[in-house]
Image 1 (tube, rainbow, N blue to C red):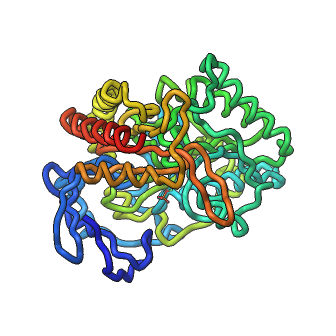
Image 2 (spheres, helix red, strand yellow):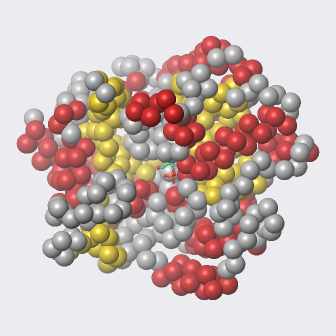
Image 3 (spheres, rainbow, N blue to C red):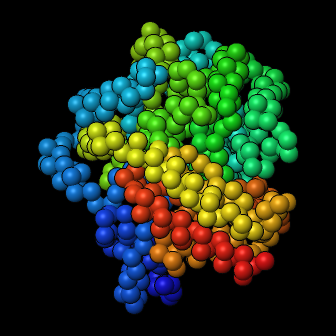
Amino acid sequence: MTVNNVRSHLFQSQVAKRQLDCIGTCKDGQWLILEDPLTKEKKEIYDAISGAAVGSLKHGDKEILSQLSSFALESAYTFCTNYSNKAAEDLAAFMCSKSNGSFDSAMFVCSGSEANENAMKYIKQYHLERNEPKRFKFISRKNAYHGYLIGALSIGDNPKKPLLKNILLSDEQTPKISRLYPYRDMKDGMTEEEYTKQLLENLEDTFIKNDPSTVAAVVMETVCGSALGTTTPPKGYLDGARAISHKYGALFMLDEVMCGLGRTGFPYAFMDPNFGLSTGGPDILSFGKTIGSGFVSLSGVLLSSKMVRTIEEGSGVAIGYQTYHSHHLNCRVGLAVQQKLHEGNLIENVRIVGEYLKDGLKKQLKGCKVYGEVRGAGNFLSVELVKNNVTKEFFPPEMRMSAVLYKKTFHKGAHFMCVSGCAGYEVKNGKVIEYGDHLTMAPAFGFSKDDADFIIKVIKETFFEIEEEYL
Ligand SMILES: Cc1ncc(COP(=O)(O)O)c(C=O)c1O
């Protein structure tokens, strides 16, 4: 099913080239109905990535949609400098209550990129209130994604970044530390502890080289998202990174826009006992995506009492506001979604069925020569494609294997996020060359073992077909 020669007036992804239209959902809500705008041909597809890891509930959830319409009738827009609203207050309290005391306050905006930019601003404000105006640098990881606004892109590192480099924050302001990529960076025989040590030494060196008294914060995704494909940190890494940040007076921030709020099987990803923080939380955390589950555009920032008290006892004012801060309807729907996830034990389901899915993928792909590894947590999982799984050599970038992955899985009835660049990128003659390919899945939290079996079947067939056709 392809769409050609239909002009679009929508400036997005494929400029002026019309994509397939999504015209609704079917079956149990995890399936989308796509339509070719030219031929009107339709296709039903299992949304194994919930848009872009956005859906925590399934599409078209009747309970939420009926609440949404009644909430809309009762909703009035107000601007946050004049009034608060009960929906935003209740949602903030709910989110703090699920954090085991890690957070004291929340603020709400509309996208993950905006959340990260606001977090950067509050981090700066925290240092100003403490009379440390020199702190302006944000240390973050290579191969990380934090969004597509100027500040968020600056602290990130993705293949499109070099093209926009001279309008971004400077390299001096945004020093980078090693990527988190055990599959390629843990050398043969290296233990998890040694890998943790190597990553932490790199972080400490980066502080020292960049004048620690000028560093405002360290920012990292708890579980990497699209750029690397759901890599999880080695044990002790997050604790160590927080400790080093604090040693030098900087704040420690986690970006859980893609991996948070249940996606990895815990209320916050940093709570995972296998790789999370062993006590407490970060100083500040950004979230987005699943909080509104695609029904409303909602995201935000959670702040620890350390940050809140400093500002409360200082100026008492949060710097900056945007028109859609604390939007009443968005927050009310966000709370309904969160309550449904917690009351319906759907986060637990992510853990249980996610484990089943991960094990099944590993078993079924074993023996396939183009299967690199399965990684991730909860139902936030990726499979890396390689040309040779002994040497870990990737396919030549000109073969565009992420597009092959997308096409083949789509053909078999499932939609994944298929991405190139996990193994790095470089710019040659003004063109970005991306190395390595993976696919990522993140189904709705209520997915079943039957759904998992379908995902496994599609991926298995795809990988074995690639082995047969491309080796
Ligand atoms: C880790 C992470 N941070 C931030 C963002 C940006 O969120 P948004 O696309 O809602 O601006 C994303 C989006 O995928 C993400 O994965």
